[in-house]
Image (cartoon, rainbow, N blue to C red; front, top):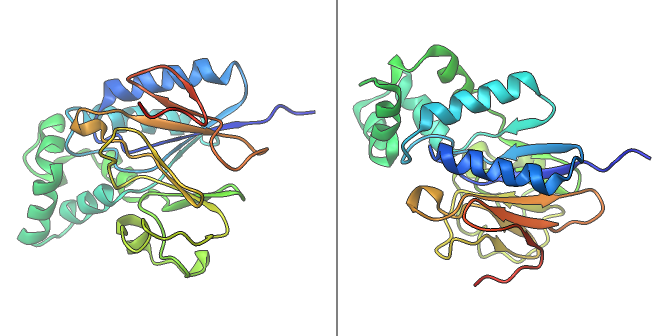
Amino acid sequence: MAATTVTYAIGDIHGCYDHLLHLLSLCKIHSRGRASRFVFLGDYIDRGPDSRKVVDFLIRAETLSPRQFVCLKGNHEELFSIAAADASDSQRMAWFQNGGEETMESYDVTDPSDIPERHRIWLSSRPVTWNDGKRLFVHAGIRPGVPLDQQKERELLWIREPFLSSEIDHGVLIVHGHTPTRSGWPDIRNNRVNLDTGACFGRRLTAAAFNDEQLMPLAILNDAGPISEFPFTQS
């Protein structure tokens, strides 16, 4: 019988390259040689110091192992893509004020259109969701009560409420980021798992490990501490 693949979902990176490398090394230890897949939930750029390094790394990883690395779009990739196109001054300012200046500094440019074309195309062409049959991986969340195939892209990238407070069964577990937790720990509910733990604000970068046998995470991993088997203690 084929070994079960472990899927590691990784929250918002926001230019925190060192956090990313440390977390991936923990995922490798946790996998114990099992087949693994990595689903990144978007927001690779902005706020943190090393957006270019993060994007370089993910492009190389996806090119070498396209079935192993799934890189979804976040709202910051959308903000960047608008700013790098024929954007108005207000649209560019929206990106600058949300971490775009740090991204341009990491690329050593003063205009988003000067970021290398390969990176611009990659950032703007990310898929919005990935579904493994048990879980829907998405950046921000979904509109409760709307069928999954009728969700609007803007809400998949930007929604907070009424998604975060919803207790309804969405048909699949929603694995998302976008809304940083104040505790630095993931927010795990019966219907969703939030993995944005605020790495760019000096907190943790977090991954959740999943397999085909159970719905909820097998383990929670973060770059600031040891691997925690689920359920874990948030202390």
